[in-house]
Length: 388
Ligand SMILES: [Zn+2]
Image 1 (cartoon, rainbow, N blue to C red):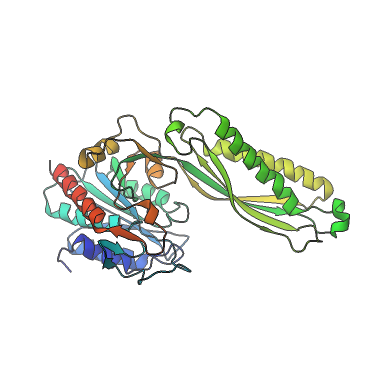
Image 2: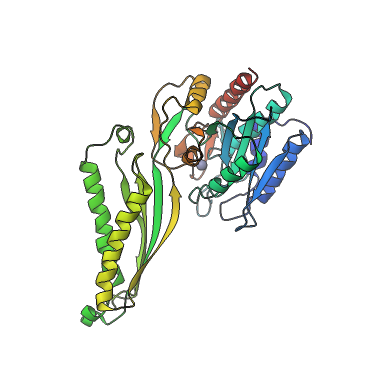
């Protein structure tokens, strides 16, 4: 297996592993490990102790010293269930100047380019090290990267500039919002609706909490955005309820109501501040409920938390990507990525990858051949730079 594969051959291989977030990614990790090993690159696996069917993988090439450029991608993809695909989603199919397949855009196309670049770096005389970091569980709330980042720092000399290759049309994206989400389970007390004052209706107790979110949105929208918030769309923190279920029948006070509330914060607003504001409302509602029935309660669990990517002053990763792409415009996005987690761990981080986020998660997901080739050019220029 010691022949050097092209980026397309590597992407084709990666996409053949159906690494939907709920399923294993180990066959993919094993293949990458073997491929790197066949080129004399030792990689390190971080097996998730809570999920034995998943692992992250990272590797280092070049001088054994700090300051590497880190190419970071996730190995998981979103499901294809119920989506009308015209081709097999786990086979790369070329048509009309595009490569179709689940993950071509988000983000096995970039992963393939990063693996390719690492192998090329191994054969070039790079003066500055290059690292590869492949995570899992990105699509279910960026929960796989933080322990991987800790493990990397234990095993490898610390890198300095991280390029997270989420699809950005090869533009330098220097900021994104942070996010935090909660599952709220309201446990009421069931009675016949004709005597509803003796029961606790979980649905009707959910309503004021959801309305609180509406009020926050209205206030945030009306407020003057900070300078840093002003570059986002929208330039304020959003509170969103995307799912709700509850109740049994029209004439029973609802015993249960569950909903999911997400906050997407502009940089400068802490997750903890929104969490405590929300929990304060929850405690007020619970007190009200328990006056009617002591066992009524509200259970809250956090389902994800992703720190914001804050645009850096003279950021090293940003400067690197700008020098490689020639892109000098300001770009920020409102979705979360692993870039904020690298930044929180003390790395300079930027998002830059081939493909358009509009194609991510879609049926018939694709990356244009032109974008994929742009990605390869980016890696070639990076390799020249690393060679000094
Ligand atoms: Zn992604």
